[in-house]
Image (tube, rainbow, N blue to C red):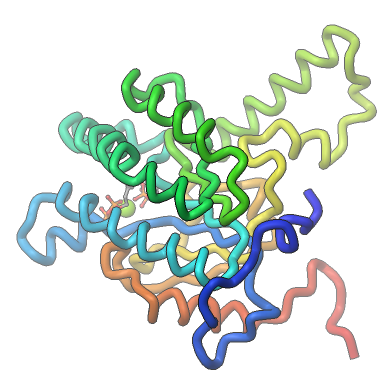
Length: 257
Ligand code: IPE
Ligand code: IPE
Ligand code: MG
């Protein structure tokens, strides 16, 4: 997708912090929100308390990105592999998603956030699915930041689904296999219509992708911080953005002279 998003949605409502170049902000930031369990463990709390605090970090990050004119924020909330966690933790997370969405929907609407949930939503609890459908519909025409919450999301599952959808179109004669190109494939991903992330942030020091946005991160700049997700704040986001602005993106080309 073109970078039209930058001009249609990104409008800073607050001045960006000194030192940050407002003209060179990433259009799309993706974040692997990791370290909730360790944050809780450090405080002798149950893991789920880390998830609860993680919601506050996500709200902070969304507000800052929106205020500074970043066009899209895509957050990894629950992976296709996270079902393998203890049942109580999974149930807590599903209930938390539902509670938070119900509570925050009105302010998301007022703040012009366009929310979407990316992933296979079928296996999610019925109540959560209904809320997701409602939130998606009610915010669809909003003109502010694109907020994508990856829920039961896996990069491999997303690519398999895209392959199946393309194959089906070929079988019914709607599409010539020889005509399948990168645009056609990208259009079948959950992220269709969104430009690729410019910056990926992973918290808690882990140096892996964990099945996140495998296609879309092809040329993203990667910032890894030891900060645990519940502690992620303005200073940590600023650090990531400054790191990003210090990079030279070449997309396979050479440094211009
Ligand atoms: C990330 O934090 C949140 C989810 C995966 C839902 P973790 O729960 O993975 O926290 P750690 O990695 O165990 O500290
Ligand atoms: C990635 O974190 C998934 C989310 C943040 C939702 P994990 O904690 O599940 O990843 P691994 O297991 O450390 O790779
Ligand atoms: Mg983790």
